[in-house]
Image 1 (spheres, rainbow over the protein chains, first blue to last red):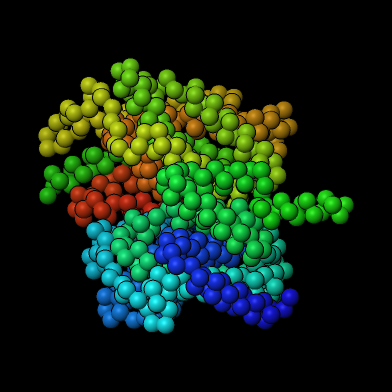
Image 2: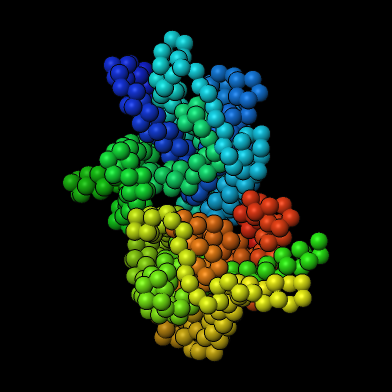
Length: 314
Length: 288
């Protein structure tokens, strides 16, 4: 399938899903779906760096929170509409991603992964001590009751996240089928030989970290309006990091479809578990599934089907 | 002002001594065996809770409790290494998936503890929790002094074991040249299995030290991820003297930060150190 066709198809899918969602009148459906969609964006973004390039990012929460706190600041300053906030959050988180990209110059493997975790804690400490955005007490955001044209505000947030999810999937698919994607794959498989064969590894890694970070920041920008109360502990919650790693690993990290499947699968299970059992149990489910999949099915759900398909052919 | 500073430095040194006990397991698993065991802090909390159970139910001294559960922790380490070896190391996939594996273990351990014990802070009782030694203007609380002493003993024993026994030297040889080790008819995988089990066993003692110093709740383990890796890297990965120096340095830095700028800044100290070390001097302060 051509890349252009895929973009059009994604846009059509987004429109159809939104049109179908208009039939649902229950607000809870939109609250729950918003979270699942947010995880589609986060895990797809994580996969651009983790799955395609082979660099493990434990700092998803930092990028998400940068986007969210950027919105808080702008909201307090003059309160622009959400698309502007998303753009601003994306730019800021993209710059942070660019900075993280320069870390890859010296750090690989475990060291890179741990320093992304360190980045998240340092940023959290800064935000905790910054009174303008509420400090450790947190900050309340009063959101409008309704949005123009759409009606209920939660449906407006749902539509925004749906568009972001479509956008990130289309971007991931485009990368996969471009020279950029092949370049990133060579870095993942053997960075030394890639460098030796003339692949501009640093430039490709910088593109990858910036894109991945920007998408995470964009996903975080509407967050204050969704939760209406944001504090550093919830904004920088490690749950975001573990989920955005678990979802691609469970779905499969090779293709754009993997994070999508993983996010829908795990996100839905978690919503159900949170409602029916408890929120502690849903973290246990994530942990167990992630460990189970990396041990038993290293290529995720997609890998399971691929192996079966290959078996039938052979 | 000076007595504040003196006290901050003195308790920083004690805190650093305790951090050495927390880090020594990582220094073995990550520094020597190259296994990025992110879940180590969670096992330390597990150690705190086993000490809590033995202390509150049977009145056993927490340090003694830490020693008593070492066989269980050795077994746990053994099982984890087996899983890790068969799923990742043997296939040469230890990088990305191995890390995700340990990150998952961190969460499973933490949530399992939350489900069993809840999120309440737990503490132990022992005669040395409470009184302090007074040396002029400096107060040395015994609940800090005892863990620091335990830590020194633990690290000293491990250092002697590594440098004086055949098994210990074999462990040191694994990261240097496992091919040569094979020629000496030693199986590197077996050596790594033993060494990793030992690294997890240290978490039992580190955990009982932790619960002597402060009340423990399952998720505080996360605070230690940064500290242990910062100290390990800053100390030059596998070196124990370097690790001790780095631990005391970070202990003092955290305490001074907490005293003069407020405790809300101290989590960033270790991670700040880590980022600076990784960025500018990845071989650590005593690296070769």
